[in-house]
Image 1 (cartoon, helix red, strand yellow):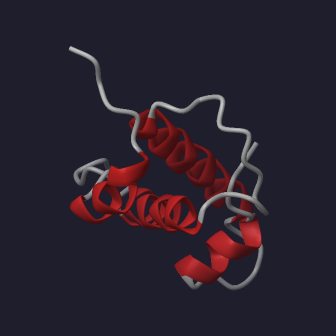
Image 2 (cartoon, one colour):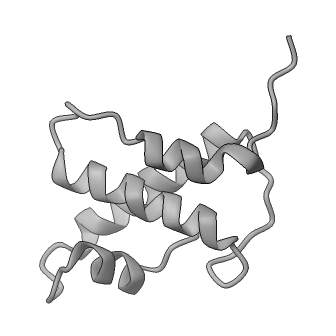
Length: 94
């Protein structure tokens, strides 16, 4: 389940119209997956209404990178994304 709505994503990306809805939806799912994988919380229980604001912001930032850099030349887990998520991340056990 997506934690960011298509409408919120299009507003963040400054997209009008519906021509790229399928592409944006794919990028939402990819960004959400990246963020949840980084947090190590696949069973989070959040919805688009209950997701913490910092997680939503991180998803939108990662989405922007995925959308603008479709060739994959930039890591979507930017320093800004990692900074937003740092306190929520499940620490690794060595």
